[in-house]
Image (tube, chains in turn brown, purple):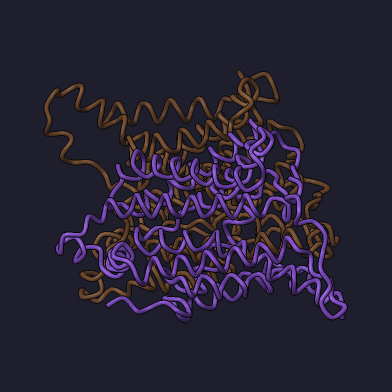
Length: 329
Length: 286
């Protein structure tokens, strides 16, 4: 465990000092993107990993936060109002999503969330008088929390980093809390949890709200980072990318989604400078991970490493939960 | 008045295309219990392939049939090589089809570039006929005719042949079908090939009507999903009626409420998913 703690501490030091040794704003911006996508992926992981509910509609929630903030700012409201309203709207939308989609689990849940995501996308794309359609909405300025100007890449990186740390802390608390345990319980043994007197639906509903809130926060960071939001970020592709981040890194692990977000963002931004076909690359990685490492890269590599060290077959026996072993009905 | 009629004709033609797309989608969904998220990609790839075959001098219909056969092979290979490895893990299978749809979309973009292609209407079917001062484009009528013919053929296949009975048994209860000696895994491959071929044929004949462009897959997949959810998973009649219903909703929605066109399209599906999850014509699983 000390090796793990050392690695974590080293990673934190690297992240905290990143702008000092990454001279180019281009790379600082990529680090910022990784961090807010990591928040979104960690939020989605609450449902996919811990609750066993695979959602393909989270880009809709992500986008609602972005659009509400951008539209309110455009209407002349201040940043605090816009941010608060965006989060309230996202949580309200999450509650609606949850009420409709939690009538089902497994494939049914996936399809209802997919439909809901498509409806939100359709509104953003077609209701041009409200959302400006495909042209998107511009945001004039970034907020200045406690008088700190966030217009430079470095200052915005630190703001994102602070939010990221808070998100990770919240996730860690969530996982260790009795509530987190009950969410995992509804994933593994829904009927038994019900028999034990737990309100399975309510537990899943609250997990959905928690997931939605952090998705919205990530969406806000996204819109302030780009100072622009368009229907593209709400599309099914975007939901799929978020899901890929969770699955690639490792579901139901704290750091898996962070690793996954890093992989996807780096492939998208850095590799696309060299390879034209990053969509193809993304698809191939997706396929390879689903088939050969269904538990994700982080647990997969840990498993390989352990097996390698012990050279015993006992380590394989205790794998983590693969994506496919979702909820039991 | 005439605008409404034109919309109606377009709606019926789109309904025909949607049926070709969603019949296979429905059968796959019914049998394998997964929504095949690359069905839109089969449609688009089939359309692109038929354009290339037609340019190679095969003629419109020859090219459409060849692209059908090619897609059947591609679909079969994907099922055998990839989906088969994940048998029993439905979520992993759905995600695999999603990933494959990215790959197919990018490959299409690589080969056929981003410019939309509008293949010419096959010779002899251009022009229009006049019935009571209403003008019907011939090709759109032909599309409907083909769709209805295929619907009847599929109905005969599913309801009146031994193979159809086996497929129906697999849809109703795969485990019991296995017990009585039906090789369900072979049915999976067969239905997957059939679904891919139908989607490709739909794409091939829809080309002159919808034109082919990157993103066609993402436009068609949700429509297939809506049709099948509305009609009921695994139900051919449901797919047929759902296709025409969505054909109308799509065209009239786009024309009359452009702002909320997608909401109008997805709302019925959401209502059905929430209120009647087995679909309008679906049977409640025993």
